[in-house]
Length: 584
Image (cartoon, rainbow, N blue to C red; front, side, top):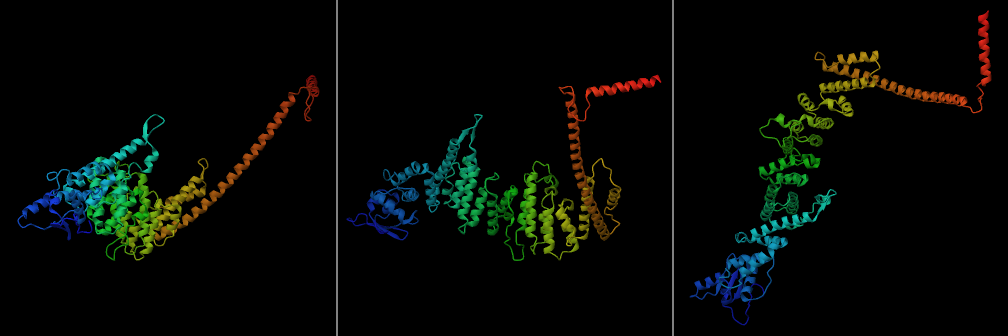
């Protein structure tokens, strides 16, 4: 057969021409009507007029598929494969090539191949689904798609089960468990992930839903979604919005089955494509449930609104933070119960600390934006509960950057901004910077100096030992600190000057104490050395005397000691003197 106008029986002139999609096939009635019920009925209806041309409209698979069907009618051999079985199955239904008109007709042949060959092989099922994309809805009505989807889901589930059983191993206690290397590798019968990425989104969605029903692991579903999105969303097709919304609906309910960077990528694309509100809210909720794993780059979502808006999408980040703070909570609960530290539904303290640092970095990044309103800056800063931050250095840095970039703020706005910071939670370096920061309101600087004074006082008190009484100078200084608390009767300028003067005095006193402590430590070391040397001399002297007493030769060899005879002589003379004295 050559081109679209073949003559199968070259020795016999054709008596009918079949037109398919503008192409003409010069054929013979007898082999066609012996196999095709549709062509038989058309020829029978025009028996009187002796029809010589038939146009077949909307024939599935087009001229190429009809050519194969015609070959089958003429008994010409050709191979049925996974690339043409769907087309042949549909065209056999269109032409009514069933057992009613001929034994072992095309319909039964394609049915047998589909059932015994295709459905037992996952790659072939994917190929048939791919070929069926242009055969809808007929391929769906004939259950070609349904059978292939069910076969894919069954095979994927069976592959995972077989892989899991093959990698079980016995522990030292004799119990079966999965190999740790297998758990971390992510491989477990998931070789089909790349194969499914070629499917159209509607068929891919049906395959994923079937896999979920069959019990395929959520991690495998997530990996397949990531692979599919990376393949399809780089094409910049007109179906991007549908693809994003469909992938979001297919995400497993379990956390950590897809990377959080992937969720942020979907969210950015959802914002650009203006997807449905439910799609974006679902992504924000999922991101909020694992926000402690995010990075600063993840949070920097560009704003795609009008020209006068901020550089980054602040509202989306705020909703994510609210989702993080309220994760697991009930809508009926009030705000205080949701932010309770010990609440079983609230995030862990470790997660809170991580997210607080992330938010402070985010605030520092968006602070220089000239279009960022104070209300939005405060909205992000206050999104987390107070106990989320143990140190306010990051928040102070972000606030200072905002003050530097927005120098036209009123005094009332500056006070609102400074209220975010707990100056007691500043480190020594941050406190020293804040004490000299002229961008802060004067009252805030006074607070910084006051808390710095309290810290110095604490350092002074800890420098003395419990047994040593406080010097008179420190008692006077302590009294001055106690009496130097911020007084409502004094003006902020007076408080500021007084506190700075007292802080300088406290620092000098602290320096003196440290020098004195160093001197005491040196004296202690010297005394310890002298005691060790003195103890060593006494020991040697005592040892020499004991050795003299234990002399084997009856006298000591030491120069400083007397012999026993001389010592006895001294004793006798003293007795005689006492006797003479008593006689007189």
